[in-house]
Image (cartoon, rainbow, N blue to C red):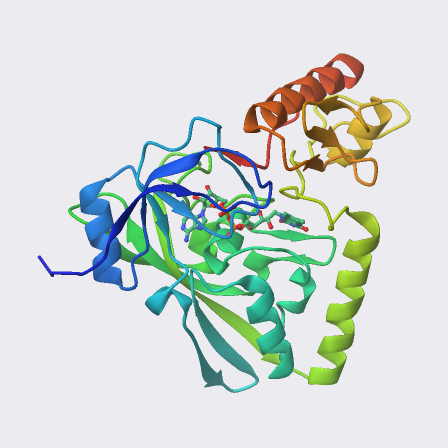
Length: 315
Ligand SMILES: Cc1cc2nc3c(=O)[nH]c(=O)nc-3n(C[C@H](O)[C@H](O)[C@H](O)COP(=O)(O)OP(=O)(O)OC[C@H]3O[C@@H](n4cnc5c(N)ncnc54)[C@H](O)[C@@H]3O)c2cc1C
């Protein structure tokens, strides 16, 4: 077994965009694949922390070993020429906004549609983060990482097709729901290869600014939140005046029409700018957010008979 100097830090705060919630009993910051494998041996149930932009940590904190991949080889990026394209290989801990900027500067197109989405590369891939302009999975070439099973994990690479990118869902990932029989699950992403088209840096910069401008206008970006709390539901029955059965509708619109905007529990509030955002005050507890999520879900269920599923991951 390889030796390492990696420390396991005790009783550490967990940085999330909600800015609420408990601490990690143990936190590891591996810099190499061998160190990550050692983490898996220490706690096969470990949890991976990305940028904390889609995460709510319960006030009680986290029992399992929490692993941050924000350093060492997980924070590195390399670019390989591929004719009209380039393969950009980014460590799971690389910050997506930084990667987008760097790619735009180098005239590499495809990631700029994700402008304004806070995420690590691993977190963006596992959630298939995206929005009105595109999704992460569209430009993924391959995803590398460790399957949880086996002593210290089993290295695997999945092609874009094998990942089955869907709406805020892939067949990869620790807390994501299990897919159909035979689906890949319990996968720790260590690196993502993106296939980006060569383009004009000035045009890409303009597009990036447009995407970010749209986001700034429609979402309360200055406040603490984790982005959209609920996934947009697909209707099983027609909602008269809203949409026919089979259509996917905006969860924010349903929340708004159900009269939830402005609802509050403790320091958590349904944003008046975007109904699918819950914002938090510095004094908020994770329990406030959890209770507000339950109240919004109940109100939408009572008004439209639609059951909202959370997009936010709760630890
Ligand atoms: C202001 C704001 C705006 C947002 N706007 C959008 C938007 O427009 N579109 C959108 O899709 N999302 C949006 N989000 C949500 C968030 O940006 C995305 O869900 C993003 O993909 C989360 O990535 P992360 O690295 O922060 O993951 P985290 O929040 O750290 O983790 C989320 C889940 O991914 C898992 N995970 C993280 N890294 C890995 C890895 N390497 N391997 C395996 N599992 C991993 C975690 O274990 C956890 O289960 C927004 C959030 C905020 C705060």
